[in-house]
Image 1 (cartoon, helix red, strand yellow):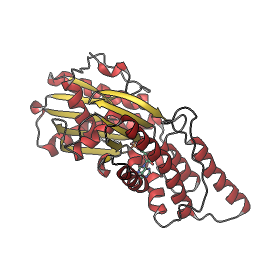
Image 2 (cartoon, protein in one colour):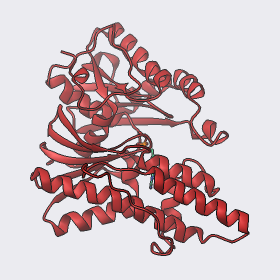
Image 3 (cartoon, protein in one colour):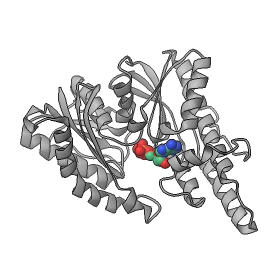
Length: 341
Ligand code: KG4
């Protein structure tokens, strides 16, 4: 089954062609970083406008690179939630028009379920059930993936996402935008024990997380250093931050995998590209006999291939959008809304 998939939930426009949930025939991404760098964060209206300009061309490119004709397509999959509402609407509207004009079904895909499916691309042997950590710029979630389309949220962040913490820290330290990858690179030469940073726990909710205190701690360090004219050891601060985020994410993920007892733990989302998180997950999970699956680096960040892969399984489960398909700014990946049946 050949699917054209579209992703436009934040600041990347993406189109891909995938086959039967596991094989990527093409994957095109147009990043808007240049536009938003000027403002130090994503400007929603500019994001929507840029999606409108890019989505058609990118889809044509995806078809061309895959060597697939429009008439070869069996369905169009699209991210319908969650994300910046104007941005998601662009993708949904385009996908509806494409599906309608080609006379093929449209498959609504939850963005987080798509992130999870990035693992299916690299790990053909991975099948549910498994525990999954999804950490990105907007979400930090611990999931019980009971089946391809049967999710349960075990824990989530109570405030900021892990990626937001990296991005804000990078901004205040003058490292750039979005800062996660730069902080990761800087951390390679730093001492992760130099700056004592907080790790929060939510009492009574072992899988929940909180990153706002950590974010504030880094902001305060930066401001205090500036006011007193002291130099910060940036590589060591970056390394300490990576370690603090990693300790929080990895402990929740491994504890969830143990509690579920599936013996399998997958990791996805932009922050899953972090080298400290990846290394620590592999080490900690191995110690406890848990098989770990890391989403490949090229599919950790937002992309449409992961949407096409999850779209295949949604299709098999009977999920179909109609011409009235709408976009949602917020929606849990275990919401009954995702069923569309
Ligand atoms: O999944 P993604 O592309 O978009 C969302 O769905 O949010 O994730 C983007 C986030 C940003 O916060 C970015 O700074 C972070 O992922 N990120 C990283 C790394 N690469 C990207 N964070 C830490 N280390 C990295 N290597």
